[in-house]
Amino acid sequence: MRGIAVLSVVFFHSFENYFPYGYLGVDAFFVISGFVVAPLILNIFEKSEVTGGVFKPICDFYLARVYRLAPALFTALVFSILIFYLNFAKKIKLKLYLTR
Image (cartoon, rainbow, N blue to C red; front, top):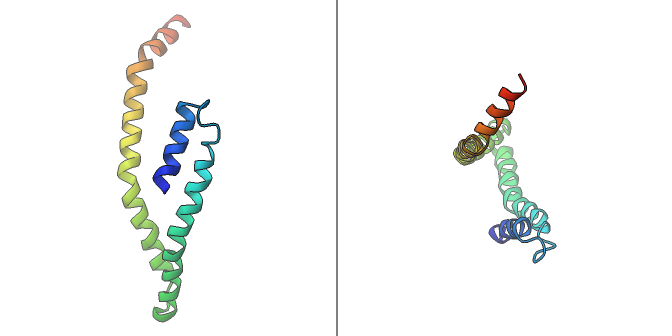
């Protein structure tokens, strides 16, 4: 379902005339993500009542999310910088050269 929400946003940006309410996919994505993540966090709090500590399990929970998302973030940044450089570097250098 989250994939459908993401696709609705992508289609909204690609074909705005055909998907005028595609931006609602953002709201749907966050609602569905909340239903997915909330039980995981509540489970951590339930287990912490038995073990006595909540700080380390919460840190481990978010650290696992960082390890899962960081490679995709890094890849997206590298490709974005590469595409920007390939498309706009000559124009920016020319503009900087002409303004001196």
